[in-house]
Every structure is written in structure tokens, then in C-alpha cells.
Amino acid sequence: MSRSSRKNNASCFGLIFLAIFVLVGIIYTATGSDLLGIFTSTGTPQSSTLTPLLPPTNTFDVGTSVSSWWEIYFTDPLTVNDPNNYAGSIEDTLIQKINAAQTSIHIASFEFNLTPVAEALVAAHNRGVDVRWVTDDESGLGADGNPGRGQFALLQNAGIQVRSDDRSALMHNKFWVFDGQTVWSGSTNITASGIFEQDSNVIVIHSPEVAAMYERQFSEMWDGQFGPQLPSTVELQSANLNGTNIQVLFSPEDHVVDKLIALVNTSQASIRFLAFSFTDYPLADAMRQRAAAGVDVSGVWETVGSETDASELKTLFCAHIPVRQDGNPQFMHNKFIVIDSRIVITGSLNYSSSADESNNENVIILDNPDVAALYLQYFDRIWGQAHAPDPVKIPCQ
Image (cartoon, rainbow, N blue to C red; front, side):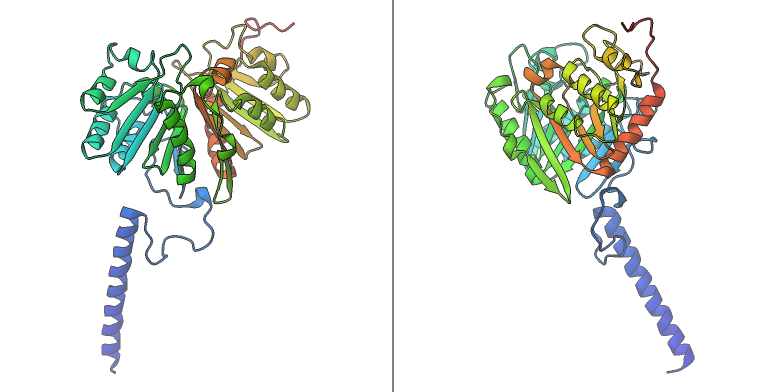
């Protein structure tokens, strides 16, 4: 074979290889499927090192992070704050998941006023997806006639069933289950304020095993069981995903705060928390005792209510533990604790006796340093916007 022929053949092979590489790249970008193993490691995947499956939702560097089985989102009211332009927001992400659902969307969520989400749910229902919603009687269905509301009526008029708890305590959950495969949870209410004004978080878990835990809770509430009526199935609410231990808890039946205190008591190095409402003294006292034992404890309270007699801000502040009040003119609505840069506790549960003993709430606990790192980065952002309490307003005896 002549030199020119070999050169021409090499050029052809090069062009063919380039075309294959580009085609595989297009398929990988569109579907996440790496047919030839070019773009992903063949070793055991670690959560935060995987290529994200979705683009960032905002300019905050940990506004979103996606792995093979979890997604973490944080609201960013400083830059993503226009409900009329929800592209790239948590609302947009939720609508994408609604549009992708094939068989079922089961929702237990406290309140609702986002029309684009309602329209996406109606479209899902019209294509045969089983859409059902359990909400609170007062802040959910009872508020649907208020200005800016009517989204539940939109669902019901389309034939989607919506049920409420019809009791004085709250159906305060904020979880969604898609196709019995994926759980959406966290502290974010599905409202314009919750997504575009408040500081809050969302965690998404892709696991049929975890989804089954939430489906069981949803089914019980759908059948009219709320509050102390609900049976505890806590022994069925743990899983291990890719080496991460996960525990799901529901209040009031699982006595959640007692379990959080037990976790706090295991801390050896650090505790960080963000709390919309923190009025539970035993939990605050457990943190105070760990701080006295040398654990690095700090946290941020939502400013509204933090200076009342019921708030436990004073318990930690007067023990000389670094605590702050948030700087968001709306609400800092998070309810999470990070222990020893590994254990993340998040969900709908405020740290109060009513949340623990009366309301319907959910909490998910993960032992995962990668997830914890994201929550800690977010904590640092909220901490930087917060301010120290005024000693005049919180006198220590």
C-alpha cells in the first residue's frame, strides 16, 4: 500500500472515529446514557463527582447538584425571584418532573398557588397519569378561594381528586412521589413565596424502596388517617443506597424529635442547623450539652418568633453558642441539621412539640458526606446573610 493510500485511509478512520465520538456525545447529553463509557468512570460512582444530569437552577454555586440517585436544590431569592419568569427555578424543575411522569403523581403538600404547576398536573391527568393530592384543610383547600389562589379548584374541575385532613393540627408535609420511583421532599412549599422569596431546600431521591415508604404514608392519609391515628412503620423506613444509609421518619407516629436528639448526642465534631421554628427545649438542650463537650455548634433562626419566650434561641445564645437571626426580609424556611459533616436531617418538620406530636410531617436522614457538603455550603451562605441577636432583646440571667 502506498504512503498516500495509508494517509487517506488514516484520514477516513479519523473522520469515522470523530463522527462516532460526536454521535455518542449527543446521545449522552440528551439521555445521560454513555454507550461507550467515554464520559463516565467505570469505577464505583461517588455522588457529587458524577456529571450533573440537569443544568444549575441558579447562580449560587450549590443551587443544585445532581447525582445518579439524589438531587439537591436550594432557593435563591436574591437572584431567582420572579414568579412570572420561572425558567431555571425550582418550580421549573418540578414541572419537568410532572411532565416526565408516566403512571402516578401522589402529593402530600401543605399549600399551593402556582398555576403553571396546576396546568402541568392537569396535562398529566389528561394523558392518563394518576394524580392525587392530600393537603391541609385550612392553608390548602380552605385558602383556595383567597386572592391569587384557585389552583386546587383548577385541579378538581379537571377531575383530579384533592383531599384534606379536616382537623385542627396541620397536614404540613411537602412531599411528592413520581411513578413509585422518585420522592421530592424538603422544606419548600409549592407557592410563589416558598420558591421565589423564602430560603428553603428540596431533596429528591430516586429509589423505588424509598418511594414505597412515602407511598405507604400517602395511602394512609388518602384513606383518612391523620395525626396520632397513623400506625408507625418505622422498622420499614430505612434503606441503603450506593453505600448511603437513609432513614425516613413521619410525625407524629415515629416520635421524630426523640430520634433527632439521639443523633445529636452522637455528634463528635460539629452541628449546623437552620430553623424556621425551634421551640423544643430537649433538642436545644442536647445541642447545648454537646457544645459544652467540645462539639462546634452553630445555627440560624428565622427572625420572626425567635425572640419570643417559646423560642430556644435564648437557650443557646445564653450558653455562648454562636447563633444568628436570618437576614431574609421574608422567611428563612429551612428545617435542617447537619452533624459531623456527614449526617443530613431535612424535611418539613419544625423543631416544636406541635410538629412532633400533632402535625403530619416527614423527615429524611442521610449519612452522606457529599450531600452534607452541599448543605454546609448553603448554611455558610445563610450564615453570612444573618446577624447576631441583640443582647438587649435577649437578656441572659
